[in-house]
Length: 150
Image 1: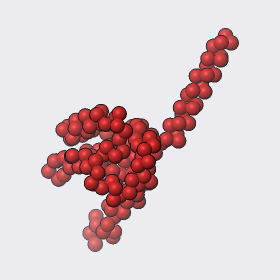
Image 2: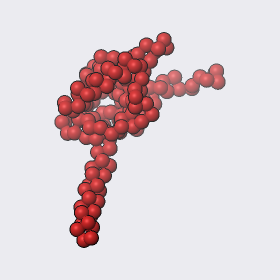
Image 3: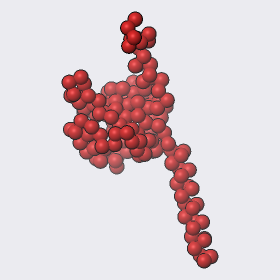
Image 4: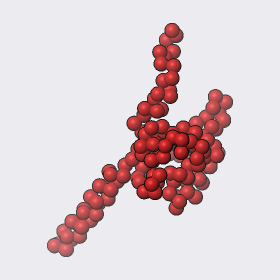
């Protein structure tokens, strides 16, 4: 065996499928081509429901216009301005419930540098986001009380 060869011929597929974070890949038309088990768990759509569907299934309607502008810009530039960053945003589950997810993005290029599509890693941060919101509100209330006393 060559030193760079893996003893696991399907390792890349196993890594994607067993990732603890959702892995979603959409082609240049925004059609979902990769959807792992974590994506099923987070967004509620099965693989058979998601594959071949438009990304709009997980984008809240009021965010779609901004999403597609950014998507097209990133494909055109062959890079995302958010490289190396994880961004919190709203998403929507299959049951219509809005959640907060932390997303990181990459534009996937072929061997010749042509754009194949966009890759996103996502994790559900709804609980953490809601707790932070409650904490911020409580802090504001305490600051108001403190200012009233002074």
